[in-house]
Length: 159
View 1 (cartoon, rainbow, N blue to C red):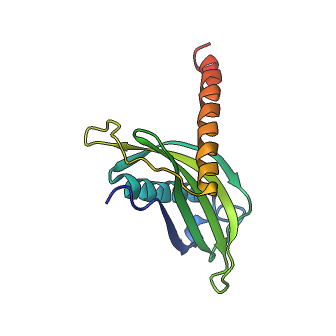
View 2 (view 1 turned 90 degrees about the vertical axis):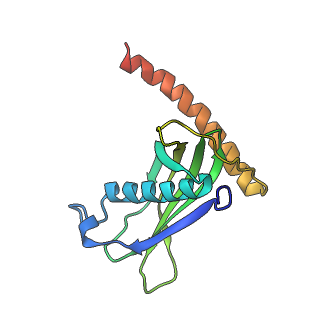
């Protein structure tokens, strides 16, 4: 049911196929996992098929090693009419231990679409806790910054 599940976590082991030439998990693999968790979270919240509109501020804090247990957590932090901003954290660690360290963080914007691929309305999320209000306000500030960056980029696209 839409509007009930605002966060989820995917858990799995980092496999040898995920390794880059340096012996650590490839950043592209991490970005794929982020997109998968973002989709699952956005679809659960909206009850609709969702597409990725934006992935930004990706911070690779520390590497993930083959054999690590990986947890990719996505959480709705702001909703618009058809879009959702999600905070995504990737944590990893030795599966024999209970501690997981932050390896990557980013913000995704997902858009719910109908069967024709057109944006469609989603349930509104209203923050209640202080931290959720801070996250929502941060998402709004990031949205404003993206608009400014987009305007600057237009000069490069259409000189």
